[in-house]
Length: 124
Image (cartoon, rainbow, N blue to C red; front, side):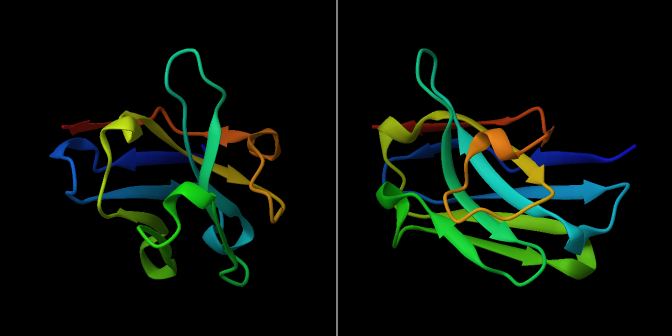
């Protein structure tokens, strides 16, 4: 079974850091594009960051540039999202997803394989 599984969420104070992990299993890691998404209740799912497993190209939504870093470890079949200087409004469930193609816009409708999500809570 091909799947992605997230881990690493938790509770952190404003200004703190968390690192999310997303492990791919059941398929060739390098064949996929990986993305991190978040969606607060009543809001549209937002593409936070994406990375190509083929060539490492990355995308960041404007609000996280300079604070979040996406990376991949091919040996561990894992993608990471390092989140620094977190803000209370970034409290959300963060989802990892995988797509078979790359898009520079990181659109959620390109992604067909989704994890169950991990809760990130940033206290003020």
